Length: 308
Length: 308
Image (cartoon, rainbow over all chains, first blue to last red; front, top):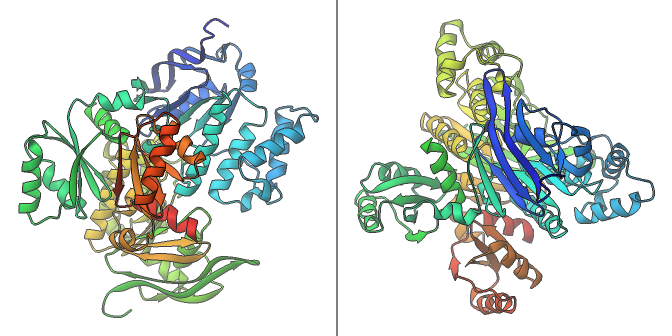
């Protein structure tokens, strides 16, 4: 155990698929008990990174340590320390909730003595106790995700690697899922999660933005957002698409991003706001409100990725 | 089909699986050229409804018309006038981009005289003009989704059913995808789409929310936000929203994180604000700002589900 201060550490980690550099020199250090969010465009290398860390894929070069164990040298030993949940987690649809948990308990060699207490706790944790005898195939998408998480936790791992666990999960179920993650965090579990939902990344202690196989930013959500270096305003309008098109080319406007019923506009300076609002109104388009805001992580994501 | 251009109309549509009623006597009407958003939690009946409309599943009772064709009796004809793409839309991973397009072109009987033009269109729409020989499995999720959409509409159908087309797609690709949806609606196509991203729901002309097989709310995004929400929403901006959420949660509130702020749904903002301040003060926290805000669609969605 060389670098024991980090639960997860990679040095110049690279993975090539033919000509494609899926990971291109990743340096990552995640401390014990951290909730770390890895975000990035589709194809940036997020899934590849998690597969290497979980010992199911070899890196082309570089090194990775998980719980002090070298993934390069001892990928099997890593598997005892981590819970890994992939986008398509392997639940057996024709087994019940409970049978799935028992199956994973077998796989991870959880002793007969420990099982009842662990399974009861995981079922309670995930609010699946009333559904323990339901076939996994008959569970809703949100419940399947929670069962997947429970299965990944069967051997009480100290590190959780979650690859886009909330894809296709509705807003109510996503909230439930995150409540479970906070509970795990309180117990000292280290969590590395990838997500396409930037509002979820806002909840992480630190966030890494991966692009083309490289980390381009690592920091707390707050520091990342403070790094924009330009004031940001929110303009509410129910004609978002027309307003977005109109505002984008205006002088003093650095960036425009649409969010449903509002746009976020990065400005050279706040004095530009009056002019922007006037142009929208002169064109007969509605403005239901405007205010200065802190940029969202999604604003930062778009700005950092598109700049490249 | 009456002259006002209604393209989808169902009445009392119902589908049972054994004793379970997946879709429970729903009525829907979608006009020509409309972008219609169909929302609901996982397992609420969205996909079952879409499958019935596409002629992939026979209703247990009730019925309706898609493009003037009877969903009970003319399911084969319906398939020729619709494009259907689901989150699991199966492009063939082991075929190249071009082979996939040719394959679907054949399935949809695109006439030979048009096939080349449609192929070029699909390639350029997906941004794959220079990568037509690439294996589909090597494409990033967002690009694959665009290609899947292109393949689903090679036969230029006037009606599109998109079932969670942007699930797990990054924020930039999602915005690109919605530009395509708009382009098609502007070209006169009717788009019936499901999503879990509430800001995407804002881009729809009209929405219906389905829960446990029943439609529980319907209207434009604006109408829903104004009328379907009996409660008020307070935005609480915090230095550390995750810890504040925990505090408010244990004090009996139901907060959720939106960026660096919390949204707290309450019966009466005037009464709740001092209580929130007190709960936070007792934990040694001071909010940067508390403000009553217009509820977002996500607030409305979560509230409607919780009161149902």
